[in-house]
Amino acid sequence: MSTAAQIAQMKAYTDAATSGRYAKRSGLVGKYDNVRRLWEDEVTRFFLRPHLEQLIDRKASQMKRVRIMDLGCGSADGYELLAGIRRRDADLQEFEVTLLTSAVLGLYKGVDLNQELIAQARDQYGQNPKLIFQQANFSAGLPLVGNERPYDLYFTSYGTCSHHNEDETLIGLLAEIAERTRDHCLIVCDWLGRYSYEWQTLWTNDLPENRNMDYVVSYIYDKEERAQKRDELEHLRLRLMTRQVAEAIVQQAGQRAGVEIKALQFFDRSVLTGRHMDTAEYNPHAQPLRQAVNSLHEASVRTDLSQLLFDYVPRAGFEFINDYFEHLQMCWNSLVTFVDELMVKYDEKSQQYLTPPRPIPASYPPALREMMERMRRVVEATGWLGYGLPRENIIEPQLGFALRHLVTRLQQGLGCAHGLVGIFEVDKSGC
Ligand SMILES: C[S@@+](CC[C@H](N)C(=O)[O-])C[C@H]1O[C@@H](n2cnc3c(N)ncnc32)[C@H](O)[C@@H]1O
Image (cartoon, rainbow, N blue to C red; front, side, top):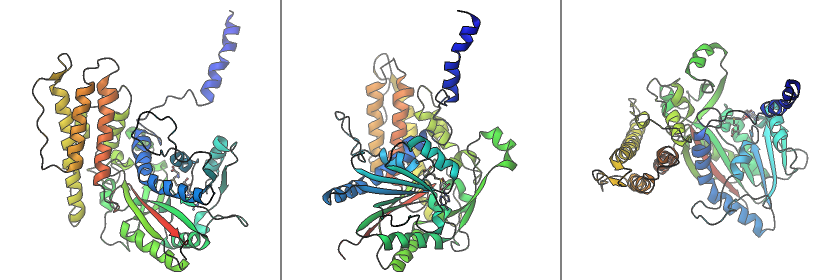
């Protein structure tokens, strides 16, 4: 083949490269890193699942499908999150486990102020007539057009409610949702947590005065680039939230609408793995734990487990939070060191421990004991496999899931993490 003909064939690679599908993917960095996909999305799904399941059943009993409005949808991220909720996780035999199937979804409407993100969402999902997108400002009221029917689920994700820097706009929006609800709806509000360790310098006991933060979007760059681009970095003004304040906002909205907006659940998401743990922008003591957890879940990458060990530095005047984080640190580190010891003691050739692993103390919290026992079984069941990098591809990801479970069981839904999420309900069916 001539060189010219060979060059002509190169177009196949050029097309592939420009389509973006040839891009090097890594779960170690970027918006959709391993922590986002495997911890944050999954923890949100875990808490939403029972409520979405009930909602779907409720609509089915009325011979209706579910209508969803995603406020601040970005490039349809909420759709992807919700569509990924499974009916359950545990069994092995079934293939079709999706909760929000196409047959169940009536309509998903994504709303965002950002034109580029709306265009991206339309690019990806525009061919599906049940997924529609609208550019609108949710601070100016509920974006309903003409006689558009109300929705069954009003969804927000990843701190979107923190764009309501003045509580009044959120109160107004929630009140409008409640007023327009005919029978029943669910509302999911997602804020930045007031007491995340990653911004410990911003902690305050003067909640009415110190409400917002200057959020710098520096985490998308690595350390050197961050330093070089410091003056060009984008900043957002965002509301920080505690559960107590969120409850007060929702109560005010309910009073205004003349109907109760009932809190069903609060949870803290990304307690030690918020994006600014890695940047240490707002806390000089923050350690890059997100990076270490990303590495645990990255295929065929070996993680230095000492990078996961966490040394909480308390802040005077915040004893109730200090106690919580100290407890969490002790549990987290106990699990990490236990797994490290198991791997040191396990002998692949003889398929047993060189010296027996230390017993799990009965005094440890149940969630920690469960996860230590689970990891002991994982190491024994897979440590001898040899092929397929059992440490990198099985034991480390399982340690990631065990740490996720531990943090999820210990969280209290108070605003002590990157994200604080509230799930609410308006129910007029008995009125
Ligand atoms: C933190 S991002 C979350 C995006 C997406 N929901 C996700 O899960 O990745 C917040 C989103 O809210 C949008 N937003 C901010 N203020 C808004 C407003 N007043 N009205 C509508 N959308 C807004 C932003 O453009 C952005 O896409």
